[in-house]
Amino acid sequence: MNRTRLLAALLSMCACSAFAAPAPYLTIDHSTDTLMDKATAQAIWQEHLPAKLVKLYPISKWGFVSQVEGGFDDAKVCVVTARAMMLPRSGKTLIFRPAHTATAYASQAGATMQQCKALPSSSWARPWRPLNRH
Image (cartoon, rainbow, N blue to C red; front, side, top):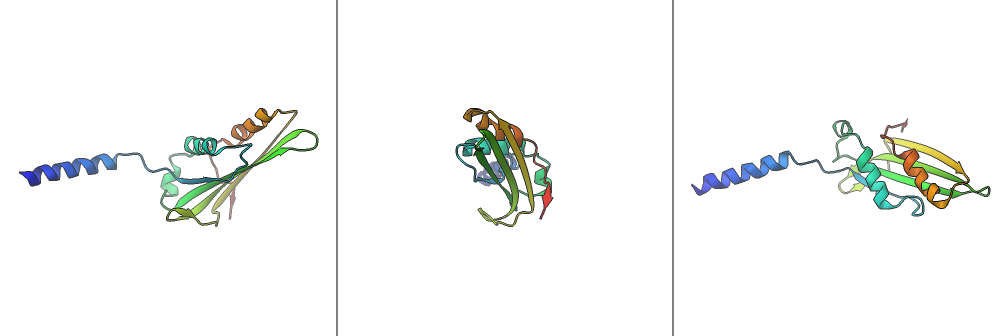
């Protein structure tokens, strides 16, 4: 009788874990803190990575790196560069051998620091599509 209960408990635990949400991709952010903080970058990754991507690129084998840099030039124009790279994964680390990269550029004349900080989120936060294959 105890074996039956133990088996039923184990089966119910396995069934629950089979329907749990998959672990998220390993994402690393190397952005300038004045333009993009780590929490915002993580939120953008979680919101904009399509579910179909998991079928093509398994979470256990791939991860992403983002980098947002820029600032104001001499004419007070906010210039921002955002780059996303898909890298192969080795355990809990990523190997810098980009499989896909995507780069976005944006500028806004006469922007305040707040507007400049919002610029990468509005221009870069689109569904990720690989542009260049390396």
